[in-house]
Length: 213
Image (cartoon, rainbow, N blue to C red; front, side, top):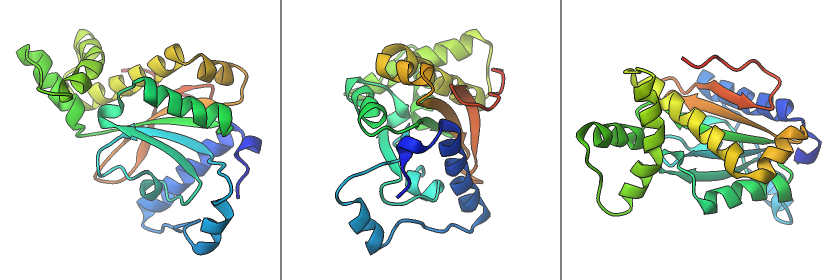
């Protein structure tokens, strides 16, 4: 089992990207998915990344990053919206499990972002608890509107950046881990057609992050 506590954030990120590369190329290894791995991980877990992504059925984390049992600590909500339970889950991954990497995973054709854009434009909202999702995505849509964006990809990227910034702002534990170099946060945008994951923003990762549009 990979010892996450001895992985640098950069090494963990490289492992994740390597798995996505195998998936995109159509040559996944399907690692750590056998009976031996099941037995190995039964006593404890040491995931190398916390994956906080959208609940969209097309974003199955272990598949698109070609990982297996015990590799990823996965938290998913519609539109990757944050609440106390999500923050607590992510903090558990970082502070208790010692995971060196937190990934916020958004994607194109996100229904939560599209619904929020429509609601903002029409001055309406949704029924039930879907309203809560739309309300939490609204600041990202308003920021993208204020920046003059019209392309859906820009709205997706803005929401990913907003989620990463909110994580860092609201979680003192995560912020401290990033400051100390024990962890990093990266925002990725996933493309449904070709399966690629692209860097949108980073915190504490030793790679250049693209400039905001």
